[in-house]
Amino acid sequence: MIPPTPTFIPTPDPMANPINMPELLNVWGMTDEAIQAWHWVGNWGTVIQALLLLGVVVFGMMMIIRYLRKLPNEKTPES
Figure 1 (cartoon, rainbow, N blue to C red):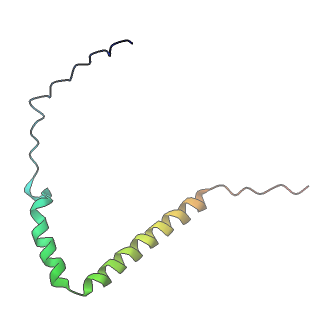
Figure 2 (figure 1 turned 135 degrees about the vertical axis):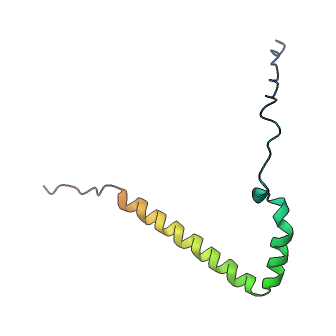
Figure 3 (figure 1 turned 30 degrees about the horizontal axis):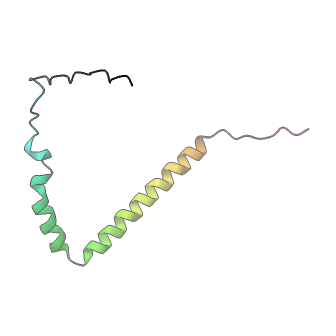
């Protein structure tokens, strides 16, 4: 059996690490407020979820219809 060829792990670029994310893009920092807002909404959460699901379904149908309209119409020539 042939031994595996050693591959060297590249050293990371010191200028690329660490990446400092802006505070507005910090997802984990916003989870407490999001959970509190979700509990504050109460029973309207189901309505919000249904509206979001309806929006996703309508958007998907629009994309499928747009794709199908772009397909060439293949009509067989009459003989």
